[in-house]
Picture 1 (cartoon, helix red, strand yellow):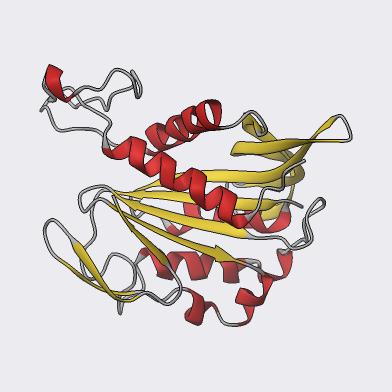
Picture 2: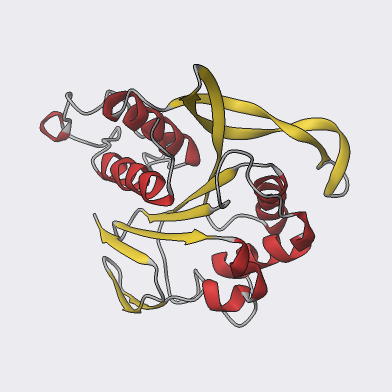
Length: 245
């Protein structure tokens, strides 16, 4: 039995991002469409503006699983083991199961065993949306993947002085129920892989979070960079893997 390590999950994210980069849309010419890779395309609004969402990332991730390995199984919209309530207030002790976007499994002793819960997000979304996912990732007894699709990035996208950046919301998501962290059932150490795919600048950022990161979230969520219209130059990576696509 192979283990689902952080490196394995990161490699799956890299393959997913590389598929997303080549994904055609309704404005693509026929010659730009590589039929051997996937038949999925990005749709467009009536204005012919390409519509990007987390759904394409999730489906591409599933395509990668189908194409690259016979060892990893997956389920979609997986019911959580704990109960939650996300209607009026964000509670970790509600009466109903929530859902993980995707879960990954391995065969252990001839049984299918869950190892990873995955959440997919698009745009610099609301704090509430981030907090909901992080509560699930922290409290469920499995490691996790948080795959975030951003259309583009400017100097304030990841963090800024008014705390509306992606990293700012990640920190709030962890701090909301920091005591919720539950160790993984089937692994020596629980981890959460962060994958941030920036569409316009064709960049993928990867980093693995473990429990010790809870002691100082500010140290974990740091990345210094200089964005332009078409590229991002990372000046201080702070252990983030920077993959140009």
